Image (cartoon, rainbow, N blue to C red; front, side, top):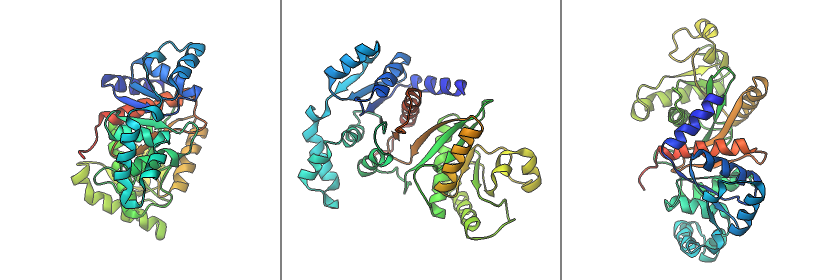
Length: 336
């Protein structure tokens, strides 16, 4: 686990990006920011009252925090500019100028506007808010990448012994359609590759191959076919197979028995769950039962990286999420 985290930090450091932290009123954010700056893994802008944050950091002994840019965004010269821009973006949805200005009072909306304006490369928020509070501004302003109809998420599951699995989607889409599930599979493979993980994609179900039938397994089978048709256009040469049961996906002995001709079975690294219910249960079960480190959720499919923190996040979680966001930013964004 430590080796993978160290690799993430080194990758972030190799091509530094600028990340927004809107929650400068949270001690965990200040401590994580100090550590990121000590590691030289990203440049940071932290929202809040600059004088109060400086005093707080001094009391906590955070000697590197002084290198962060501190912004009282409501007093920023950009406030009126971003209010007008948000109005232009959303006026066709019925947003008035007054409502746009009110919306810019929200730190996450202002932070996302900075990312949209390319004054930062990504944002990490959610230490004291909901996932929707973080993701809704990104979908309203930055929007999804070309070719992506939805945002989705992965967890990087770091198991003892150094094995890394990618689990998707465990945080956003409750019941994806077959076409959405295929999209999640291909985007998750691209995300895995960005983190140095060779993607081998398993479309998971309660049945392997042609051994079962029913609406749920048929939906996974359809998603697999849709993904296969899109592979050469989006991810040339990507190994992908399904439906597969979890044991057939990861265990070579089981794979040899159940799906001996699969290009993925027994060695899958990217697990695509058929719905949010199964994905969320699975990642928590592996996290607890296998003593795995679960990094995420890592949001994907948005045109610039915006990632959500759990309200129960500890400082190490925040550090890891900042590094992950910086690495996503290194992959760049699509032309607007």
